[in-house]
Length: 120
Image (cartoon, rainbow, N blue to C red; front, side):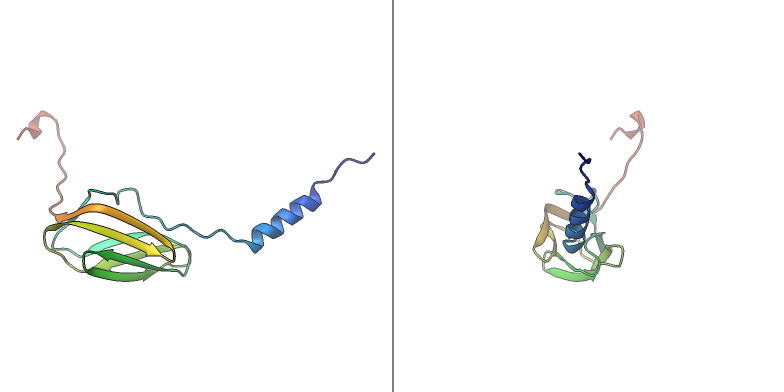
C-alpha cells in the first residue's frame, strides 16, 4: 500500500487561492476613533490602507475628497481647513466598505504631560 500524497490537494488549493485574490480591507490607523478632536485652522489629513489602485472617498461635514491607494495599498486624503465646531461624522469609504467615526470635533488639540505639577 502506498502512502497518500497531498500534492494534488496542495496544487488545487494553490490554484484556488491564485484565482480568488483576497480583497484588501479598508482600514485607518487606531488613533482615528469616535469622539476624536481634529486640529482647527489646519488642513485635515486622513490616511490608511486599501486595495492597491482603489479610490477612497473621505467625507467630513459638507466636505468631500478622494484619494487613490498606491501600489502598497497606502492612501492619504487632505480635507480643507475648518474652524472649530462639531459634532461631525467622518466617513471613509471604498466600494461597499465604509468606516464611520461619530462625534468628531474640530478644535484645539492639547498634549499635556507631567505629574503633580499638572494641577490646574
